[in-house]
Every structure is written in C-alpha cells, then in structure tokens.
Length: 394
Ligand code: FEO
Image (cartoon, rainbow, N blue to C red; front, side, top):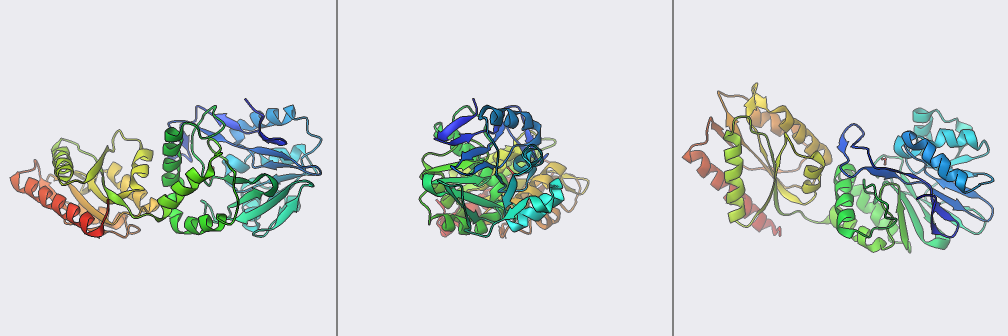
C-alpha cells in the first residue's frame, strides 16, 4: 500500500496501525490509527516529514527502501511526541548527514525525550523557509497543537500543508483521502475533543494564521489526507469558536438502580422540553464518545450514587477528564442517590474548576427516588431548558 504518491515526487511512507486500541495509555482507539510520514524529493534535497511510532519502525524503513534514496538531507519534526518522533533516532543513524529541522522548543524536547545530539538540529523561526531546489518549505509555528513546540510545514509550489496532529483523526483505513466523509468527520471530531479541545483558544489563533495560505491538500500525521481542505478547516472553525448547542451530556453510574431511575426520568423530562440528551453509562461507555459529545454540549449533568462518602470513582474520573478537556459547557448539575450521607456534590464541584459553568441546583435523594425527588428533577429540566432558551442555544 505504501509508498503511495500524493503528487509527483511526494510520497506517503508511514504506517497504518489497524490493531492499536489505546493511545497514551488513555485514549481508546476503536478504529485504530495511522502514523503518517511523508517523503519529499526536491531537485537538490530530500526530506522526510515526521517519522512513525517506534513499534512501526520496520514499516517506515521498508517503505523508504522501496524509493531507493541516495540520501535523506532533512527530517522535519513537527512535534516531539513519540508517535511521530520516535523513529527519528533510527533515521539519523541510517543517514548520518541528515539534519532534523524543528522549532527551537522542539529541539530541547527531542534532546530530552530521545537523546538526539544538539549538532544534528537546524532550528527554524516562524515563517522561515528552506529551499529543496525546485521546492520550498515554509515552517509555520502553531504552538499548543497540542504540545507547546508544535509547528506545521507548507510546501509552497504544491500548496500542501503538512499538519502533523493538527486536523488528524485516529482512523486506520486504506483510503488515501477523506472519502467516507461521515466516518472521517466523526473521527476528526473525536480527535479534536480528546486532543485539541483544551487548547481551543490558541488553536483559533493558529487557524487564523493558516488563512493566509492557499491550501490544496492537508496531509496530517494521523488518518486520511484531505483533498478538500475547506471541509476540515470549516469544521475546526466551528469546533473552536461556536457557542454550544441545546444539548445535555449526562454521564452516570448507578449501583443499585436508584440513580438510573433518576437519570431516565431526567432524560425524558429534558426531551419533552425540546432538549437533546446524550446519556453515557460510565461502566460501559467509550470515554472518547463522551469527550466528543462534550464539544457541543451546553450542559453537563453528572449522575452518581454516593459511595464511601463521595462520588463513584468512575464518575470522579469522568469529572476530572471533562475538567481537563475544557469544553465550552455553560451549565452543570449533579443528580444521584445516597444511603446515609456524604460529600458527593462538594467533591464533584471541586473536581471541575476549569469548567466555567453555572451550577444548577443538584438533586440528591435518599434511597429510591420519591415523588418529591422526581418533581425536583422536573424542576431541574425546566431550569436547563430555560437557560438554554435564554442563551439562544439551538
Ligand atoms: Fe500524534 Fe501528539 O502525537
């Protein structure tokens, strides 16, 4: 399948990882992923754009061997994370004349993470260019996508943006380009939620910076390429800038059924009031689906029983995760059942300081929910629907 040509003289040489199911020991990968690496032949210089995860080193090397290269002059490192940088030491060993082109901050990180010697680097300033003879590379610093050192590369003569994690999707596929739009869009949105959402504001600035460029192709380092870059650029504009929608995300755990009764009652009550609800049983849910749902949610309602005086640990984990992902969510509440007391509400509220939310009155009941508890849930549904309406969320 690779090497695979994009345009004459530019090849995909990376690896598809069909079987990987967890990234960073944190992120589920239901559809696998890929580590895209690219080889650019200029009339005078040859460049490798990023490498692959070290577990896929042999695939990259085999793909390069098929191109019968006399040398590699430069290795561009957009991002120091090991899924892209991890095979660079091997490339430098095989091509002793090769230099790593990277941002000053990434140089330090590569020295720390991969023990690459300082003399192997060429650091580039924002918008600096390097000629390959008949082709010109421009390096654009795009910090915090999603580490502080990240940059992208624009290939001027071919209008290709090599974007590394930016615009990526964890998707193993034989498709070279975004053809199965719905599938890829879901993958890209999920990827945005898990990786990019915490840096939404600075990513908006990076998107503005890219508007100066005529981009015909986006070649990310995960998932398929885009030969219709407008579709993913517009999606990112929406995800970073838009107001949330008339949606409640409701992650919950129920141990003996009481909290579940409350969740089901609230879901129906919200639905009857025209609010869309996305309900997630945290004992079985894919946490990536929850993250994706948070991109658009105006409200998060957390459902939990009280266990050992606090929330269920799976709920505490979800609250910490939501706090770290920093969605644009505006309102929050807590519902659940307890046996004899505890500090569930205080514990969850303390876990989500990054969410700039208005806390709506929680509904906690003792044991099975009674009529008064169900009426309190109706009141919560009223409050949420009213808040969404007043804010104009659609
Ligand atoms: Fe795909 Fe942040 O590495």
